[in-house]
Each structure stands twice: as structure tokens, then as C-alpha cells.
Image (cartoon, rainbow, N blue to C red; front, side, top):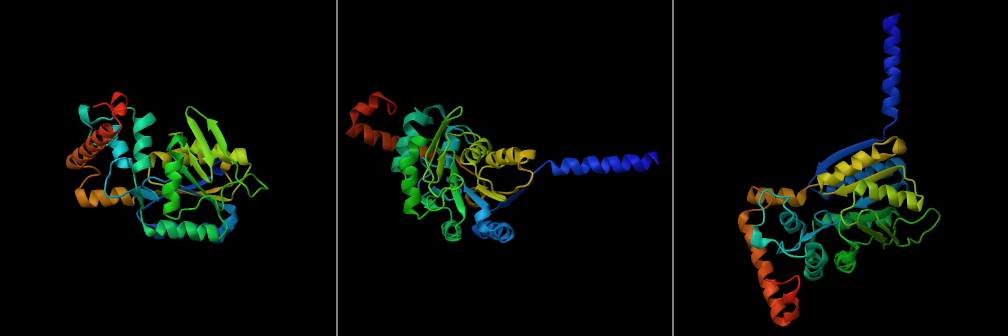
Amino acid sequence: MHTTLKTVIGAAVLTMSTASFADVSVMKTDNYKAVDKVFQQVDQKYGAKNVLAVFDIDNTILTTGESDLGGDIWYQWQTGKLDVKPKSDQKVSCLYSDTLALLFELMPMKTTEDGAVELLKSLNNRGQTVMALSSRSPMYRVATERELHSHKFDFSKNALAPAGSTVAPTYAKTFKRPTEYKHGVALTTGTNKGDYLEYILDTTGRKFDAIVFVDDGERNIEAMKKKFSSSKYKSMDVRLVNYTKVIDDRIKQNGTVLTQEQADKMADDWDKLVNTLNSIYPERARGCLAR
């Protein structure tokens, strides 16, 4: 009798514990065909208009072209996140206030794969709510939207708008760092993406049966998993997709994300750019572009 009671109580506790968490799943993929299948599954189950689609930008839908300078790999190298570290004379000055802004303005980007463009077009045609959620700063909005538009990524058509409205306003809020949501594109200056998505959902008053979040960064996937595993979202189906194509391709080609030769090439490219700019605008040589 005692054993049976313990079993019943244990089962009840397990049921309560399970019920207090959202249905959050994580998958890795290196292609947008697999991402498309995720959307097909949730859209069929809940209806497209009841599913929120959230995409990162760098190395998820857009990546660098022929030069790595200014891209996400360059940024990770500059900030010491890769096995290859920048030498003391290879570290740039004024990384956030000047250098990134300059490089984003100059840098042409390309799509990670054609499937990314086709998927977003398909989601827009279904009337699905879509948004971009990037760690870039609002300071880089003009350059960011220029590259999105040039590659036919439209996040404004079915942007996340307040409940009962079809017009998405601009939301600017400073957490520890400034953030801005505009034209369906959230630029968050490295703010925790789980915290930011919760903020924008609360601010707009929107509720969805499911969210599909696509991002190349494992840290961002973990931030979303932690946030949306809470009891607050227990009725929501959350699919987190870690898109790995850019990194996988580099490892397949070079055996690593970044070789020393590639790092030295980025440093040389930066020196050439700085020398050219300083020769044309010598006043810059007294500021962040001093060499």
C-alpha cells in the first residue's frame, strides 16, 4: 500500500513537472531544405498565422563574399572567440564605435544559400509573421537593411505588429545596451536573444502557438532554450534550429573555422583599407584609423 502510494505520488509529481515546461526542441542542420520541413510541420499543425518565424542574419541568411573582413568570422577572431587569436598589431581600434560601422557600410554580402531567400518568400506568401533578430547594433541599420533588400529578404511585409494591428511601429529600448525593432528587423547590440524576444512579444501583446527560431550561434540557441522552457510558455511549441552551413563548410575546406593564413589575410586587407582611407582623408589618421 505504501509503495503504491509512493508510486502514485511520484507519477503525479512527474506529470506536474513535465507540464510546467514548454515543448522546446533543438535541431542542427546545414541546409534550408531541413529548415523548410520544420516550418511545414508546424504550419500544418497550427496554421501559418499562428506560428512566428525568427531569423538571425549573420551566417544564417547572409554571410561575407570573397573577403572575410568585417564578417562574423572576422568579428569572432577580433574578439578572441576562435582558436586563432589576433596578434597585438592585428587588433583594430574602436571596434564597435567606428570600425564595424565602416566595414558594414563597405561590405557586400551574399546569401548563405538560395534556399534561405526562397523560404522567406514562401513564409511571406503564407501570411506568416516573420522577423529578423540580430546581435548587430542599431547604428548599423542602414547598411544591414541595404544588404537584406539587395538579396530580396523582406521582413516588413508580415512584420511582428501589436495585436489587432497590421502596422509594426518602431520600438527602441535600452537593456544593458541599445536595441531597436523597425521594419521587422530587431538590432539588439548583443542583448540576450531570449530576453529580447520575450520583451518584443510582451510589448506587442502577441501570442503564438509555435515559434521557429533559426540561428547559427549555439549561445543564442541556448539563450532561447532557457527562456522559453519556463512555465510561462508551457502551451507553446518552440523549435530551435542551429544552422551550421557556414562553419561546416569552412571546416570541410580548411579543417578549422579559421586558419592563421586567413587571419593574416584579414589583417593585411584591413591595413590596405586603412592606408587608402588615410591617404584620402588624412584627418582620419588622427582618430580610430591611426596606424
